[in-house]
Length: 166
Image (tube, rainbow, N blue to C red; front, side, top):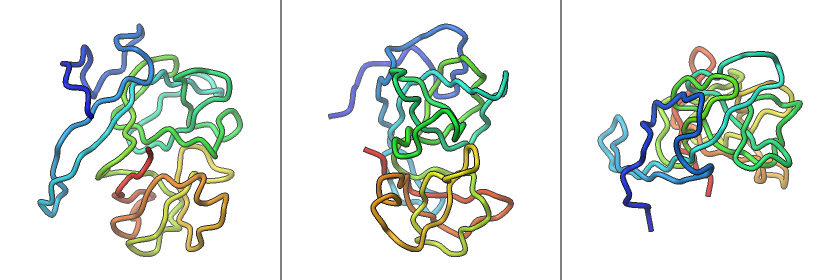
């Protein structure tokens, strides 16, 4: 059942100090551009990069950092691509706290321009930071790294998607 408490922070939070318990969940009702109602779920995290003081912009695909509770990154080298965390909704600065989306319609997921059609499974990219890759096959690794499904082909290195992280 969704948490009905009023959150202390906005979905656009980019806070230097922690304003919610890490991994708090927030569920909101919303509509897709086509008007279909859907739930969107978010978790509260700390964003950290190992590439210097670099902010994550909307659309960045994040994974959990091994051994760091509630800490996510867009860096392939320091995250675990088999533990996707979600997609950044608003700018998150390095070392700051905010929300990433885990499920429901997401208007922007950064890609490698390899999503040729709607309905393609999106997985965490194996070698490039902060992006999803289109996968035509559902092998064991792809399923483990799946973040959702493309709603349409990508344009300008991003596409809308339906996220399906638990």
